[in-house]
Image (cartoon, rainbow, N blue to C red; front, side, top):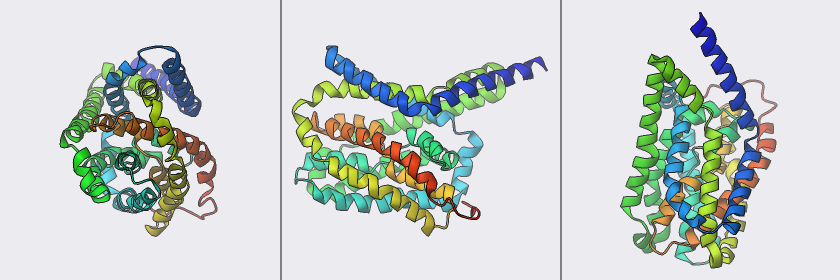
Length: 339
């Protein structure tokens, strides 16, 4: 009895603190960006933080995957209609949109590569909490994150080859994608599974899992800080070129959630699942693809500048999404099943 009360008390305290983090996450993210920008402009040597990007990402993805209960991880693949819609919007509809938008850019292969790398990869981390704020079904999106990450790592080289042609051979290397799979999918996912198994068998494991459950928002803030502080000093002359992609990112931010919502209608999903597709379609994986950009020969400083620019446009767009997307389907009589 005493142990049960202690566990409930711990869950209650952790839940209260986690809710506080999630309820203030937008402010926390922008504070992390502002602090990183301030550090980059005033403290010499922040570019050395580049070495910390992959470890920070691995931590963020580990605590993200840890939030997916093992039973939900398996059930994500049984929700065939939702999973099919999620894959269709992110790996068929959105690539078609991006293929059109990239034609509006100057004929600069490196500039186009940066835009393609970030817009072709769906987000798998903070999109979950933004979806929750926007009255979408964050649970099914969270359960699908490992599949989304694995699919984009496998398909991105194919998309780049198709859309860049012969230029892709100079930029696309297998090694960084293999490293990304190991560091950002296999190891964090395996660690998340092991901690859940430990938590199911041990009181200490349950405590550890509960405490780690507090970390998604702080870990994402850490990644934002490390990325901005490391990249900003390297941008310099790339900023004017990076500014040229802002109209493309703005057009994407308007069109993508509408495509996601429309795909939900096409697959006859309920309103909540439709909003989930809208958030997934509109939110991109800029933080995770950044290490791939650093591995491109001659990519610095332009590629990081192009990718970080998308992050800033996207976070501003999320402020609009969490207010407007909850209105989609609000008058529906009842949900249809998402399976």
